[in-house]
Amino acid sequence: METNIAELVQGVGNLVTLPDVFIRINNLVSDPNSNIADIAKVAGQDPAFTVRLLRVANSSFYGRSSTIDTVAKAVSIIGTSQIRSLALATSVASSFEGLPNSLVAMEDFWKHSLYCALSARILAKQLRGCDADAVFTAGLLHDIGELVIFNRLPQQARDSLLLIQDTLEELPIYQAERQIMGFDHAHVGAELAKQWKLPQMLSECIEYHHDIHATPKYLREVTLVHIANILAQMAELRTVDIDDVPPIDPSAWEILGLDADEMIPMVIEQAQAEIAEAEKIFLGK
Amino acid sequence: MSLHRLPLPLPGFEHIKRAWNNSYDAFSARLNPGDYYVTKSDECVYTTLGSCISACIRDRISGIGGMNHFMLPASSGDNSWKAAGLSASTRYGNFAMEHLINEILKNGGKRQNLEVKLFGGGRIIANMTDVGVRNINFARDYIQTEGLRVSSEDVGDVFPRMVVYFPLTGKVRVKRLRSLHNNTIVEQETTYLHNIEEKPVSGDIELF
Image (cartoon, rainbow over all chains, first blue to last red; front, side, top):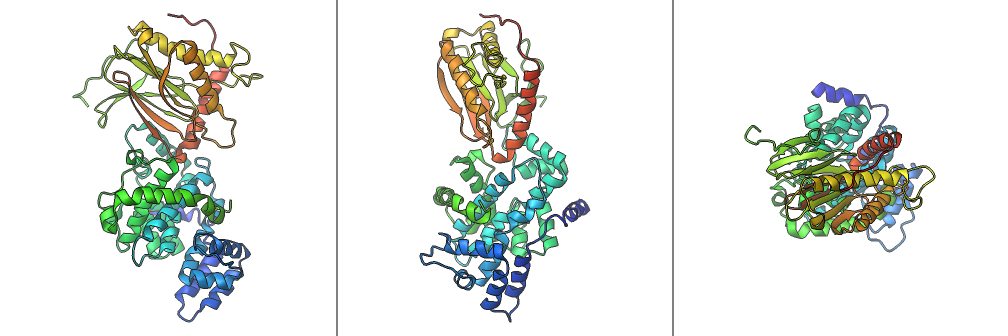
């Protein structure tokens, strides 16, 4: 099984690559000798990223009223480690354009991911010492394994979807995938994260968002993404009925110390209010 | 599984796939596009709808009832189903509705007791002409022409749906499905559409 997944992901190695700007900023952020000016310089060398960065900096995401018109200003108000998250978040959708599929419209796929990212970010702001931008990026990436499966194993992916449509009970897609293939999109996504050498927090969110109790280190972030994934489905379906979506792990809210009844409607409503602007910024709509 | 005995199907419905369902504690009959199912037993009928429509009809006194699952084929040169009287496409819709109602009446249902619910007709592909609304309009109009009333419905909007119906009690559960399922549902409905367009309905329908 392990080798299968590794081979599967190696097979897309040439089709999906991490954006150069992320790799370079990532190196600078990890380098104690670098400063904000270095990061701004690297960011400014990528025109597409510059445009997105300024869009984000001027959006309601950062609640600024003054105009941010230079990369240096944007980097200083957003913060260096957040810039690294954004470099990944704003380019991941285009990174996967080389991996098309006929099962699910890319637009629908990324809309769900974006809802998850927004929900995770909204929840993270309720917690102390939680990097909301990093969790946002984790939400955006949580299902990337799906895109590999849809592209490389279209028949099995199709069978998984049909199994869900044929099953009267709520059958989450990862369980359908396990029944059909013996592994699921979280395993595949984790392998991709490993090959990309993504930060451990991100790879844990990708790998354990359906299995939070197996999380080695970043339980809080993984739990945020786990809950955000379900709330994202509710936001998409415009429902407040938890029976319409797969269950949230019974201990998840307790892990975060948040109140479900208070959070669920608040997060859904806010994510629905933010989705249109977020689509413009992150999906280039 | 062996603890639960599958109720005998009414004649003509032997081909419909049924299985025991633990969460509903009942047998469930699964409908595909073009199917319909009528029962007197305490079992449920379910299906997945994109732009197709399902009418759930039952005799509210005796509990006999069932569900269909259909869509109108697009007949060439006739975009409006109302336009040319009995076009090929309305003929198909009439066929689907009449089969369901006739089977209910044939098995003891009374017309004056019929209770009708409508589901589906979603617009699940944004840039496509809204075939869902055509199906909804047809079904509503049909019910009205028959002198019946729609007692509840969940139609239109952008979601595919899974509909679970208990004819004996009239209970319905509608679950919206994620956009993840749009393409596979459209694919199945398109295959079904090609089939019915190639084999147009002919002949008369026996009326009760």
